[in-house]
Amino acid sequence: MATSGGRDTSELRKYASGAMLGAELNQAATFKAQKWHSVGKQKVVWTKVLKIAPQNSGRADEITVQACVDSSQAIALTTDGKKVRPPGTPTQLLDEMKMVRARDEWRANFPQSRRAGRC
Image (cartoon, rainbow, N blue to C red; front, side, top):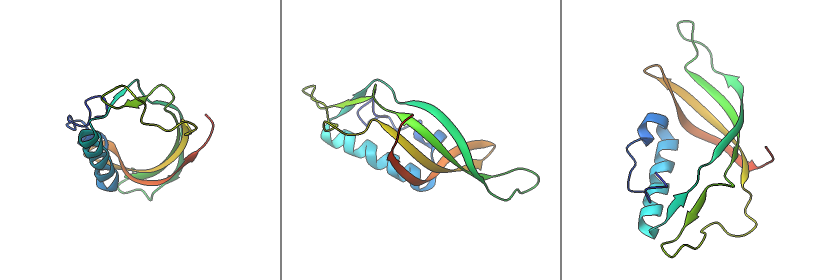
């Protein structure tokens, strides 16, 4: 989404639902309106399961995970090549996310928290 400048959101519904999908679509709209684009990729350094919701029919349909995400190699740029991220902004974040299973596929559904951290 970010590499296309917010124009291509076709993949978002494969990986996000609920509040998280709304947040990603809002971010796409911001990138498109500001004419930003991103180069490089974020990297998930590690993940761990924090909570597994009660199981239905022998399987969990909701989990909460924590991930350490390194965005040091992902840079949002303006049309004239200036960095959007202000100097000093943390590039490693600890994200907690509620994930839901829909049609046997996991999707990010609701962000629980995000804070600066170290991977």
